[in-house]
Length: 119
Image 1 (cartoon, rainbow, N blue to C red):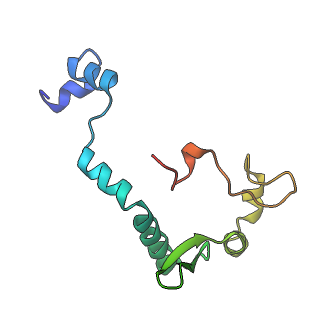
Image 2 (cartoon, rainbow, N blue to C red):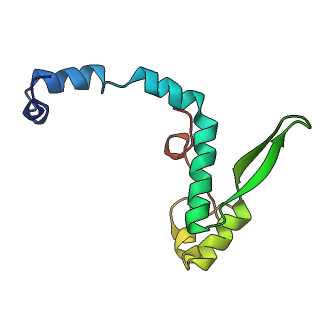
């Protein structure tokens, strides 16, 4: 790369190369993230719950009798309680896609907008 100003110039060959080939990534780090994806998700959910006490995730025991794991899972009832507790239930329900056809809160999203969707 020449310098940072080349990226800001729309006529730059550097900017054109990035648009054509995409933003370069560190493939080794990406592979590490993919390999440890579940552990990263669990750690993130645990940190959010420990810090904010939203109740949107709860810990469950998974695995076999001899190989048990603690895992954080989405808690729909806890998430609804959080919306009520934070005073944003009505606003959530008014959002596009904020409620299901049955009139209950919706937490589903397109595959691309889910924070834990596969890359």
